[in-house]
Image (cartoon, rainbow, N blue to C red; front, side, top):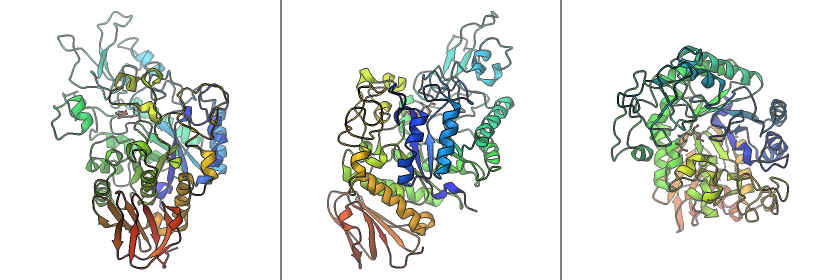
Length: 534
Ligand code: TEU
């Protein structure tokens, strides 16, 4: 039997920014529950909710202080149960966001760990003596730049101070995944949520959790390396993507597979090339899906995107599905980053995401073609963006969902200042787009509905038909051809026939194509042949 996620359309919710029901300017879990109707109407199979756990919010929830709780800003455990129950009633699965690489500095495990070298949880984290000169024990840098080690003040016991490892902020100490008790604790965390009806987890930095046991130095980056590695000046050979991480993924998958339906583990496998993404699927016995970050980071050009897809398709083991996404809470939104503000290009991107083989993840607002919001330096709340504001603005993609035009945007009560500023809610909102059959929202919904209707869009093999700088066309199974024109000039594709079921220019829906498909500038077409496969 095929697992449910192979062709699923999932939807990432950044919970602080989805809908605020208690008028404090911050989104909450009842807000998500209240808007499940929107997601059911869209045809979404599952939601991934960015961290919901108690957290001091040094990294807005990605610094967890209690893996079994609910952040009071977002609601209560009962609110989460109610959300899962209502989602289940609407056939929507709920994925939470697990952060196993590190905890908050305020997690009771770390509070205990730093209290003494003899503390029960000391070895749950990665500690090392400083180098003889007092500096860090090795050259590892944090993913957020700067050394990955912080000296912890001498414990009250008077023992000499040691340094703890943090691959992210100093307030996010890395767990020690060589410790069997850490592994056991996370087994229990998985089971706890799976037993409560949670359908799976997005796993934060899934590739990074196990570190080199000997803490060896990383080699320097060269010109050929991944951009982030060049910025950090080193390739994270020893603090990331170690071979032993796969043991942990297999262990989690074994737990996930004991549930019915099987629980999904979708990894944030933040690696620089496609070849490195594939091993996270194992032989179908590791992560159910592994995010394809190279695809997200590829420029919006037919030849470049198609190359990533072709490589992914050629390397993935049989029975495994790719997963495609264009936006998330760490990058600029696809409407801005890929489409550079062009609504037509945004629509082409949505056709691409929703018609490639595999699972698709939309980020809240993608269904509207929502662009980034210009969040000025004085309004930034993400510490990483504040520190790196000349090159990074993660808050630009984390601003409130525009449900309607006017004060409050349907996100919060009129007059309430939202936690991050609104964008131009008059220009882009759910209510207006619901009323307009030509809108990007209706396009997204119709694409999802077509996936349900045409079996080849769910499980038909991907076969590249044509690629140039501007044109990318592929077949799905016997009956579907997708053709996207990324360019500014019209183009043609010969040798295809069928009915235009969906065109980004909706006026062409229903057009019959005999032999040659003509594509206008920045136009995408889903053509279904007259022998539909079901
Ligand atoms: O992201 C991991 C990660 O690699 C990114 O932080 C990336 O390096 C950064 O955004 C620069 O572009 C995950 C979460 O998605 C992110 O929100 C967290 O800040 C991070 O882990 C730490 O938990």
